[in-house]
Image 1: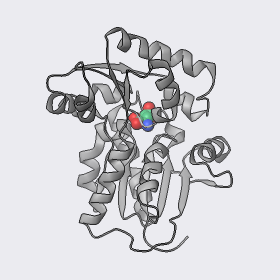
Image 2: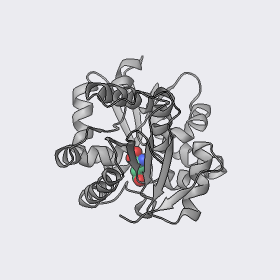
Image 3: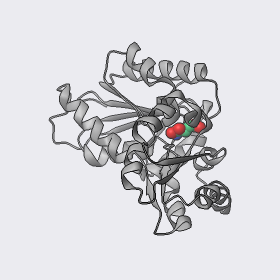
Image 4: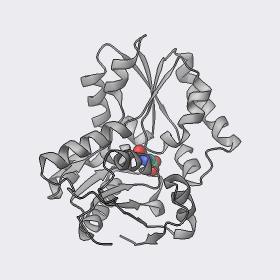
Length: 265
Ligand code: DGL
């Protein structure tokens, strides 16, 4: 593939596609490369130094493929390593963090629930987000082990999905939250099920659209927007076997002919 330099995205697996699809709908002529670190998925209970080292290795790869910007399409990595990645690389870096601020603006009863990984919820950066933006709002957190694996396997419509989500939503609903933050980029693929389970009176929020707007702003600021009018392309890479990853990427990206190439980094 040739043409203007791409934006590089990565996540522990396929979850970051929920962010990339929002960037695609806002910036139809940008080119994208996506790295799914599926051989190391899930990140959600890994030590910070492992997550940081994976982020560095993947960013090296994305830059070697000409990325003009990096989007960390993973809350867990952003909470753990956003500052380190920004310090280390010369291109602009946009992170993805749980939507605590928008949730604090939306809640009517001052009670917000956040679903995310263990690492995200125990990160210093998450506490800062809550202190800074959650003022006056009660924020209840719920780690969700197993949900990422469920999405990775393409099983969002399986009965296990509803059963597992029920276990994680119940304690938040019991506290009376009226707003739920999907604080992991895998979870927006479960949004229809979450919305069905929580009912119309509970708002469900994720950060995909906000990240897309930030990507557009930062590209513009740096004079990096692609001025061309042609539709952009996407290339997909993974650290695991394409036989496992490709069917799910095809399903989530909605392109049955796309290929995922294995590149170990
Ligand atoms: N999509 C990642 C996130 O947003 C999932 C982390 C994991 O692999 O556990 O946090």
